[in-house]
Amino acid sequence: MKRIAAPKSWFIDRSAHMYAVRPNPGAHTLEMGLALGTILRDVLHLAVTMGEIRKLLIAKEVLVDGVRRKDHQFMVGLFDVITVVDHKKHYRVILDDKGRLHIAEIPAAESAIKVSKVVGKTMLRGKKIQYHLFDGKNVTSDITISVGDSVLVALPSLQIKKVFPLKEGAHIFLTKGKHSGEVGQLKSLKGSQAVYQREKEEVETLREYVYVVGEKTAEMTIHAK
Image (tube, rainbow, N blue to C red; front, side, top):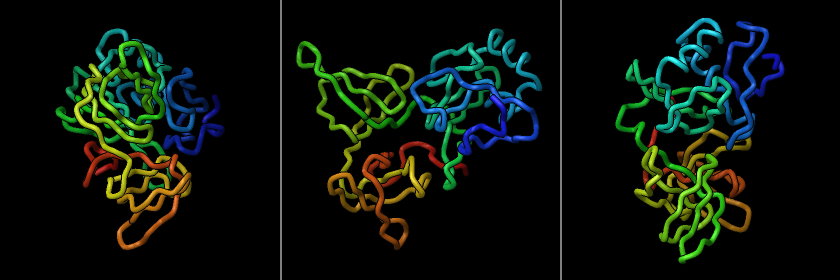
């Protein structure tokens, strides 16, 4: 696709190349995901051409959420973790306060965890419940979790380590809307609306935009340092 037509959320140099790699359809929307090749070439500068990136992905280990990926068009989205094994470097996809995707370097220990929002659930046999996560993954558990809550999972096993309920006092991140990229403390929920505190100001937003990232503080990197 032509770079000039790429989503505004893609924080890329639109004059560097005429075309940008369009990611394959994945768990994230086009606005909330970038092709792995674009990140490796245009953001991390691990090669000059996409041909070199394709060779790199075949020859060297590049992990997304702990799983090796070889397709340069693989979609990497918000809060996904990228690990370049040879370089011993780890990164998380984040969103700035202007709604643009960025890549933030994170410590090795943090690359093994992720906070993911529960967006749906299905009852299975044996009273097990399959929870559908924000990033398209599914986890099965007998833990009672509500849609809208978030879970801290280990990568790549997806073992649930902790549950962060969607409730008053939770530390939240806004994924969409004019306040996307902002963080605050959830004050109240009423129907489809939510109110959170940002510094000394109370702000109203839609409930669906709210993503719990921790109890009092974020359990993972959500902003560039």
